[in-house]
Length: 118
Image (cartoon, rainbow, N blue to C red; front, side, top):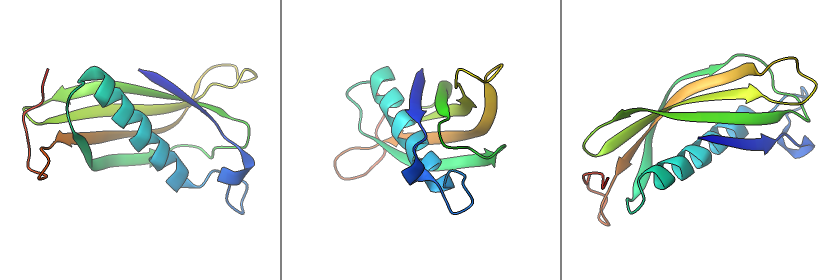
């Protein structure tokens, strides 16, 4: 599933590049949305982000495309691979800026692992 975000001036650091924390927040949010659309009726919580790789600085005006693909489905957890590209019109091709994996676990109201409803 793809999601998009416009990089605005309020997201930048003093060096003129995107604060990494904003990118991680958007990845968590968009991946959570994807998991809930893929498997409705579950109660997902983020348990990990791994192999976080910032490949290039992200500038004001970039239109980020978040490509989120399921990479593993377990009994109570799901893992997605996430790639972030610059999709702005004037770039010759989509440029890979960032990649990671994110894992969610399905929990009950008391926070205990629960099998994913499919």
